[in-house]
Length: 252
Image (cartoon, rainbow, N blue to C red; front, side, top):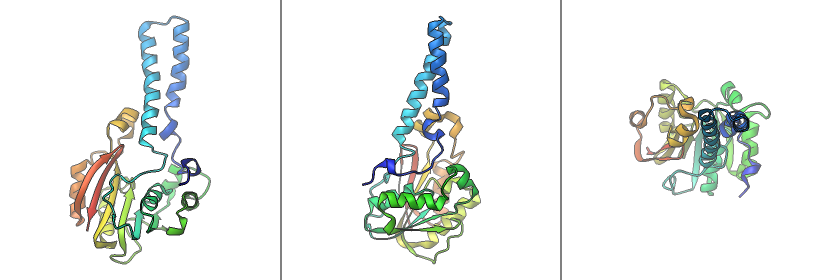
């Protein structure tokens, strides 16, 4: 397996190291406070800010936002053979996750790769080039292809895929977009097959690291997603959480 260092998912620097913006000034101010005997309450406050900044970065590293991912459940696509669709593949984290976990599968990595994508993942290579480079680095490019399209209108025939995976993509859409993308996923998935949907979960790791600054899911809680998934025609075979993740294992 290729080392994580050879992969570049292109996520914004602040997701892993943004707390340095607080940590470095807090450390400098704490050193000054100790040297010049500033009020005790201020020393305690600066010390708390320093400790929190370090711990928050540690929490994000534990979650592994910029590292290789692992499937949150072993029960997804256990047959392991067939064609999988990655909806909102981005720079390849979920695609590589699937292809490494299921070495006999092939995969279509689909994303719109629009302007919002480019602004989020920065400049440099095109999004497709970055995705292709990561597939190459992971040694799975021979089992993957890239399609540029909107997840709300998939360019595939009915019942085209043996499984679908989507990580932290559908939850970027508005309500109508969510309904459209889930309906399309249901349409292109073969009857009896699996869909693994992963969403950002505002759990204790995210709340500790960011507080209200990253309220990604808004008011869409587990029950909201249950209703939308059932409306789309899916059966919920399993649901659960992993660090920073709410996942649903669905079946058509």
